[in-house]
Each structure stands twice: as C-alpha cells, then as structure tokens.
Amino acid sequence: MNSVYFDTHTHLHDKRFGPALDAVIGRALDAGLTHMVACGTEESDWPAVLALAKRRPCVVPMLGLHPWFVQDASPGWFETLARLAKDHPVGIGECGLDFAVESFDRERQEDAFRWQLELARALDRPLSIHCRKAWDRLLALLRETGLPEAGAAVHSFSGSPEMAMELQHLGLHLSFSCSLANPANKRAARALQAVFLDRLLFETDSPDIPPRHLPEYREGRLNEPANIRLVAEAAARLRGSGEEVLAESAYGNARRLFGRLMAPAAPSGERPG
Image 1 (cartoon, rainbow, N blue to C red):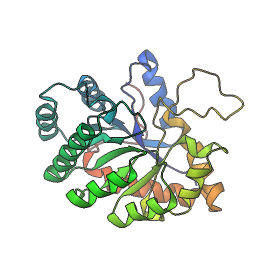
Image 2: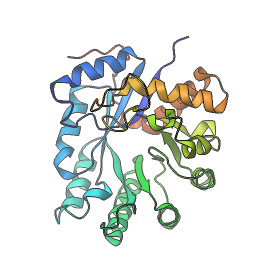
Image 3: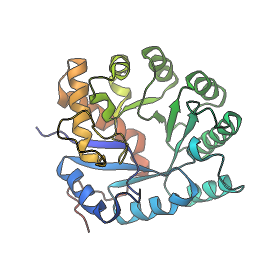
Image 4: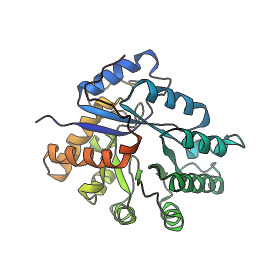
C-alpha cells in the first residue's frame, strides 16, 4: 500500500519558487500528496494565495497576518482580511505569537491574534497558529477566546510534551515539520511522543525549514512538499510505529480539519496545468 499525504502548512505562493512552482507541485503529487495548505502571512501575499488555489485545486488557501508583520500592517488590514474570508472559502492563518524577537510589540501581536481567532470563530474556519516562546500567553488567549468549531492547528510544533498535552486537551492539532527528521532536534522528538494519533499532522513549511541534516542537502536549496515523506519516516522511527499507520492517521486528521476548504474536485492525479 502506498501512503498518501496532506501537507498542512506551506507557503507555495512564495516568490522564491518562481517559475519552478508547477514542477514543485508535480513532484509533490508524484510523492503521494493530494493536498497542500498555502498560508498567507501578510496583506501583500493574500491575492497570490487566492490565485494559486483557484488555479491548482490541490492547494488549500489560508489567509492571515503573521506576528512578524503585525507592526507594519496597514490600519485597515483586519477589515480586508475579514472581507476576503467572507468572500472566499479560506482558513485563517498563519497567525499567532512570537516572543522570540525582543523588538516585536507583544501587545499588538496579542491584539492581532485575538482578532483573527475571533474571526475564525465567527466564520467557523480552521486556524493555523504560529508560536515561539509564547506558550503560556497562547494558552491563556485560547482559553479566554475559545477555538472555532472547525478546529485549529499549531504548525511546526516546538513546545514541550506538557504543553502538547495542554493544547490537545483544548482541542488543537499539532503539526510537525522537517525539523523532526533532524537527529539534533530532541525537543520535537520528545513532544511527538505526547501527541495523540487523532491530533497528529505533518507539514513541510515549504520553502522554509529544509532538511539541512541530510548529506545530500545543498545550501540554499528550498524545501518543498515532496519532503513530507521525511517527516512521516522520522515520526514512525521516533514513535516505533508503522509509517503507514501514522501517515494514514495524519492524512485523515488533515482532511477533517481542512475539508471544508478543499476544492470540490481535487483529484490526486492532478498534474500541472
């Protein structure tokens, strides 16, 4: 049996892919992926996400304001996001909190995240969350505001096993990226052990977080969704489980979380057009 995969967090609209994008998507489909979530991070890339999802039904669109870009957002960014979300079948995100960079305004980050969380709840859309060194505040805001019934995921999870349990008890999914395959990433390996099968997701965060630990990796090479198999293989090795079992669980979880955003006809055999 050949496993199928669903990449739950990418930035396929990123200009770094350029004219190679269709080849990247083609390799992903050849590797067994049926869908790839493309997450917008700021106002300027939201139209590109929508255009890509319209052109390629295997791309699932999400629109959000990333905490890195909160300080430079226009005064009307939220109204624009709310209008686009009402007019299109999109999820909300990538959004969240990032306290790893001291110069970022934490209060503005929290306000922006809370507004997007409330928008996802109001429209009942799935949410994709970014979090670095802000776990306690993230937990507090989620408890205060609540999750959309459609569900939510913390992408490229980097928290502790204890935080993994707390978030899952609130109803979140936890997604693991190619960093899981790096033998030096002991923290993610420990957290993976605390993830329930019905809360597990796989992602690549393409074009970022490339598999630099591999001997064949060339500096500057972009990550791409076809590398999702590295995540599944690493998860199976670390959990001592069958890869097909984990891949099947992660795939089913992704379809339940993002199913309402998927194009009506998105066959796995789609090829670049």
